[in-house]
Amino acid sequence: MKCLLILFYIRWNGTTKELKDFLGRMRNICDEIEDIELKGVYTPTSEWNAVLLFEAIRFEKGIEAYRTYHQKFGSPKIPLGKAELLYTFEEKKGYAVT
Image (cartoon, rainbow, N blue to C red; front, side, top):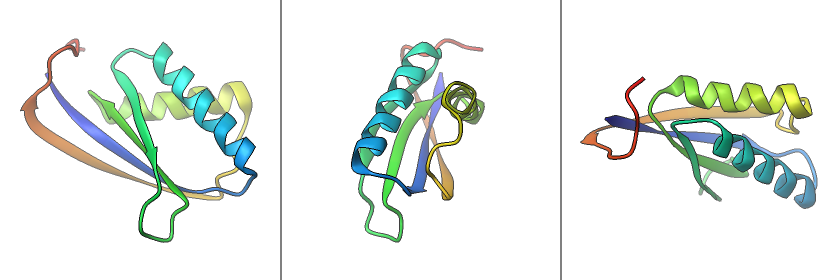
């Protein structure tokens, strides 16, 4: 199964503790959704505070994770965000065809 990487760049508008809470909640949500994994959080060399790196089979899985967060916890302190998709042409083992 082919997969894609989702880079979700954010500008955080809260405390460090709130950011850690947000990231922990996103990781837990991704653990509950099939075919998406939060691979890590990085500090980019750009105007963004952080970038979340997801691996998924479809972009809709990323949307599902963010909607689930919003439904459970309300809006995160992200006044601005940007998503980039990186598709791979290599087969990825372990992903179910949906």
